[in-house]
Length: 340
Image 1 (cartoon, rainbow, N blue to C red):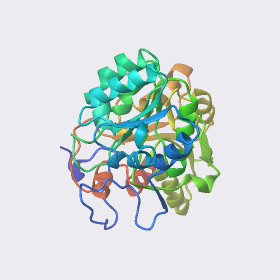
Image 2: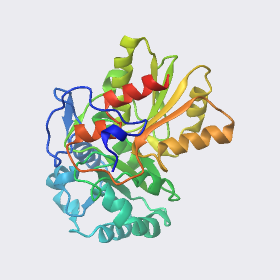
Image 3: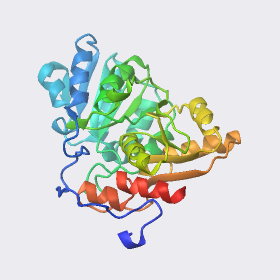
Image 4: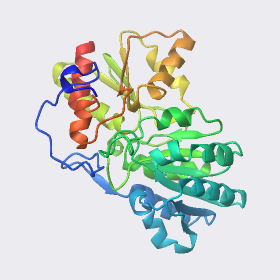
């Protein structure tokens, strides 16, 4: 296991004292940061009021995926399948065959590793209208490898027919839920649960399925990011202004299909280093997806990648782990400054 003294280039030691938190705490909100409670659960309830075909399904994790809010409002449309993720996905497929629109929730590790074949064979191959929504994506849990879904995007990117979404904050989750319902076909969305940071409202943001959005522009560095790393990238951009380093942030919430047109346009601008930042393994996620697009199109900027290492990650408090593995604001800032 990599120690802080022998860290990869993506890793930097903590620059200041971090809050002490339990490994069981999965919140990624900083102290004092604006948050909204359970945006997925509330958004699904609002949508279901006018979409009677929507049902909520989970594998003993209603409370931990915010689906309990839906269960309280629509008890007759809520299905608790027990600790049986494969059964959950098979039953969701059956519901979709009968005209329902299941929103099936579990942890990302269980969907991507335990129930992958059931999603592949019963949902994706049949191109069914099932929405798989999964908590604890990437390094948003301190439980260790059993609960850290560092490879979910790599697995689901490779699945035909499946749309893949990695939202940044509470606002985007609220906007993504009706967009998922309007899309006819299977969707996998990473879920931030509980009290979720609120960031994108300051940028007049509107989620569009399959579209990347430039949140801020600058001439020195372009950070291409998804999920919580967009929040980190915006923090890095503000921090590096003091060093007169201009950081642009291109948010890519839809991992598949990828908005190649916008990515190529922004990466083709001369004089800007491109950094892809993701809360996922450096293997098979957004970084390699972007690199492949650039290589196939003959676009060759100075390219760097911030992501989780190809190893089983440690258990512990999230702030400590984010510093250790190079995805905290301080660690990202140090990496980018070192690359310039």
